[in-house]
Amino acid sequence: MMATTHALAGVFIGTIAWALFPEAGTLPVLAAALGGLFPDFDLYAGHRKTLHFPVYFSILAVPALAIAAWNPTTVSLAIALFLAAAALHSASDVLGGGLELKPWLATSERAVYDHWNGRWLAPKRMIRYDGAPEDLILATSLAVPPVIVFDGTIQFLAIGAVAVSGVYVLLRKPMVAAAEYAVAAMPDHIIDYIPERFVRDLQ
Ligand SMILES: [Zn+2]
Image (tube, rainbow, N blue to C red; front, side, top):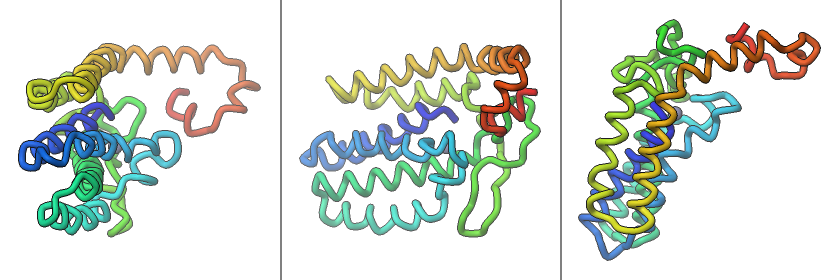
C-alpha cells in the first residue's frame, strides 16, 4: 500500500478517537497520521524490515490504548494513536504486494518482516501492489470521514494525501519504465557508484 494510504488509515483511526474524546484536540489525529507514515521511513534502508514491526508495535499499542482510554489526555492519546497507526501499517503491509521492483508481476514472497518469528511474511495481495487502483479507492475511502468532520489542517492534509495518491497511481508503472531506461542508458562506470540494490532489479 502507498505511504499515503497508511497515513490516511492513521487519520481514520484518529478521527474515531477524536469523536470519542474531542476534548483532547486534534494533535492526536496528527500523531496518528505520523504513526501511519513512520514505518515507511525505512524505504532506503532495509525496507519493510528496519522500521516495520507488525508484532512489537502491536504489543506496545495495546497497553498504550488502554492507558489512553482510562486517562484520555492529548499526550496519552497521541502516543497510543501513533503506536496503533504504526502497528496497523506494519501488519497491513501483509495484505499488499511484495517487495519486488514490479510488484504487479507478483514474483516476490516478501511482504513485511516479522522480527518476532525472524522471517518474512508472504504478501496476500488483496491490494495487488502499492499504487494499484484499489489502493487509491482504499485511500479515498479512508479520507472521507476526516474530510467531512474537520476543517483546516487535517482536512487539507487528507485532501492533499488523496491528490498525491492519484498522481502516484498514474505514474506508478511509467516511473519503473523510466528508471529502467535510465539505468540501461547509463555508462557502466557510473552504475558502479549506485548502490547495487537500486540497480539490480533494473538491469
Ligand atoms: Zn510499509
